[in-house]
Image (cartoon, rainbow, N blue to C red):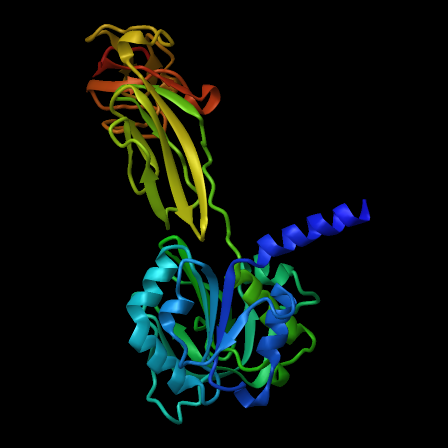
Length: 382
């Protein structure tokens, strides 16, 4: 039994660390090995590869690599800026395909002019010293929770951070107390991957301790981990030709794919439109994680899950002050494409519409679309 347990543990460990992780620096910033200590804590001793900025970028940013950390602190700043500038397209494409990148730079700017350009739609770090910083609410909900504990919500140092982060669509995890609203730790999804930017100095210069080292540990853990996307309405779902369905994804930052686009289409917001009878798998890949929803489309002529409502039959009538249901229950009409409605469930404008007449949230079956008419009258009872 002990031998079997050891074998299982070995196999699990081998699978866990088979994915390559890289750490790049020119030299230890300020002579500190805080980064190596953190990487060993997060990944296990030696379960990453350390190289300098002369390394082959194509080898580092390959399909087998899941995480890369670039150090630009102290006089590493020029090496980082040059390496990134020479390989920006390769790096951005690698992240877009699911890679996780942490750029940590508390630069001196002795060798390079501020700001440093770091791609990803205008990301820059600009020289500014921050002596006190605090976790944002999102920071409290992510890096504060571990895995390394204890943690603090406020950190101080003569120069906790050496620069301010700017760019588009970033989520701020730590902001400056000296310059409110300015970020010193931010992240965003980029395609199917994640980019994290930090301008903190070495934990040796930050209080309190050991919370400062734990902060670095948790930043690396957060940067390398995948926050799995999800569908609120995952299905599997059966809908009729021309029917619609909303997957309600937790994020729209990612790559959508469709195994059989002739059966159904999906837009960037997660709305599915059925086209012809068949089955298709719709996937969303974000932060390196892929989720799938299976959509079955049936021919309306073969589907008996919903009653037929003849064209022109009034199914919903509206008085001046009070909508009155007539025909099928009005609350079952969901807000699919083509509806004009004052709430998410009830169409209100007069006209002919196509709709699904079964509540897909409850039954996971959207039913067949049909045509119905909405009219407005002045003599309806209030």
